[in-house]
Length: 428
Ligand code: S3P
Image 1 (cartoon, rainbow, N blue to C red):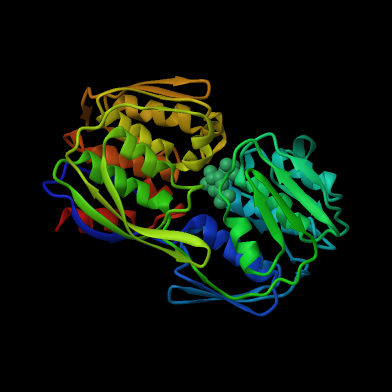
Image 2 (image 1 turned 90 degrees about the horizontal axis):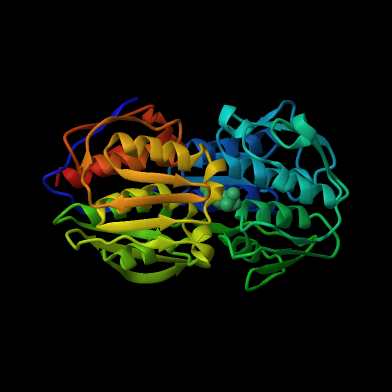
């Protein structure tokens, strides 16, 4: 699939972004291991979350899709041994979080993923789960998918995670549900905390202090209703588009603005964008707002690093596009994790933006962008990465001439309605 974008004459109106990916994965998994029915309103219906749903179905969980709701028939903590291999597709969250649940299951499971996921590091979750007592084996000493997990007798641990990763934290916490006693995870900076918020909502005894979280094992999890806010990581593409298109005026409705995810808002405001949160409220324990963005304010470059990085890690590709359209230098550091995402986002994104005339240099742990030099339309590629595809399509909205993004079907991983959302704002 090829996406073509051109600078629009107008970019205005209201848009609703799809349900949050991280929250949808967690609602499906926690619903599966709880007692009773869980109804997930506004779940993300995209390839990554469907991977989670299919894996859970293979583990014996009855899950139905009713319109924009998922209805999950909770099985309690013990699932069924699957007849075949679980396939996490392209989804790191599916693989890593499920490993935590599988560590607690009294049977053997094999889990794999697509070509990209088979290259991504799994040691970061396999290691703590082995310390908890799970047997996890695979190629290269069990560092990559496919992995065979034999779970069952799990012990609580105190885990000092070397990286701020919500997937690692969540895998250890999910494993800790099956252990007697208290599991503790400490991370260098606080990563997204959706697992903690949802576990509490499902009845677990869990406490967070700074970047340390403690969970009491063997809770009675009870299913319930989960309202999924719009995904700020999907909204980010439209936010940046509106910020860099002159005269744009866009209202994004019902976006999740959990502070562990909302670094993009601070960054755009600090770059000089006109962006305002309206109608702030809570959906369950998750903060939600409508976001108004107006284009036309001149943007300036920014320096990013340290504890904000985990709060905007998935937004860096589109932040790089905002930086290209801004005046002055943007420096992004402490973001080496980008190299082990769905693609090496530092190398691949830099390579594609260079084709559009952007002055971008990759560094070991980030990139340096000399903005304000103008973008030109080009033939570019998603490199098989959904967020690169959408970032390039946004770049095409301010580039001179036409931009063609090849291999754009990758967007179906997280935002199948992306082009429809853009078109609805362009046609207004
Ligand atoms: C996610 C955590 C982040 C993020 C990913 C989703 C999650 O990954 O990049 O897209 O849902 O927990 P890390 O935990 O590897 O930082």
